[in-house]
Image 1 (cartoon, rainbow, N blue to C red):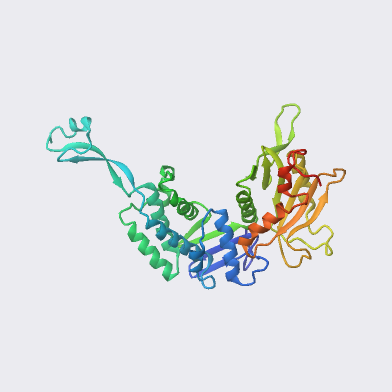
Image 2: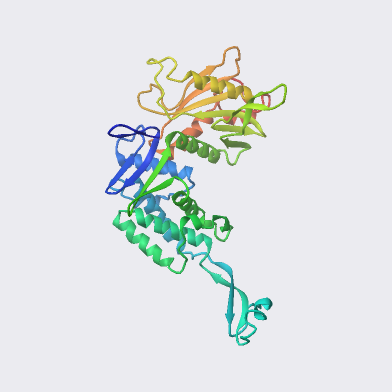
Length: 400
């Protein structure tokens, strides 16, 4: 969040951009291994692309000036590239119903209108017909996004490209954001290529873009909670890694309760782990992500892990009947160990119930996928999901 000080704003656990009249404030995360702003932007954009399901190809990313452009202008540039490429395959159209009084019959006759309103004008026919049109909800949403971005972009090249795109949508109705019919958009195999652009439009018009207006100027804030971003980034990568296995990944769930009222049977104290990996409905790994710096073992035997975090993980293990639990942190150079499993802790009097303390590097998010794979498929470790697949004695877990 942003904390309002007496003479300054202080960002806590948020990243993104604030735009006001004559000033742009960019808030970048502290990512270990990325000393320069352009490297941090690359890492952050890649994480956002995974979390927001935005495919950022190597070609489009190569055209971005990572040093000179801020986060907002980079996202606008990538949106323009994607929209131009998609429009080359044609703008979506569908049949839209029309009613009109014409000199000759088109479609079918509106009998009621013909013999009431037009009773004295037999030379006109009340027609109802369908016409193939580009003025549909999907195109209206994309046009509204173009107009919104054109109002806030300060980059000359982005403005030029947005004006070109606006011209392509000239015959599509201009709708205010609050009047857009999101519920009328249907994506199928014929228009699935528009799904990414629609997600970006939702981000601009409905989601984390928040507009503020002072006089005739529109400001904007695009802020992301880093804790949430890190959690979703890891969760979605894990889903991708395990897509072709018999393992399923749940983010922020499944919801289970810690206690049951013995008199009423009502469930109390809901628990919702960050990430749960299951096989056939049985949780085999619970992961909680923490956007904070892990300490070295010499500096602090507890490594800076909070006592409340340990209690929470023990509760997850009990409620979800899972004996493999993991706290995952971003890696940094002050740790003596390489990224990966930093420590494995055994719960007292429970020799097979383990809590792993692990880190993952984010300097190159593309490599984070392979790092996560190594962490969970490192043969011979208690957290080896590959070995777990071969074991049936403990619901899929290899023994410690």
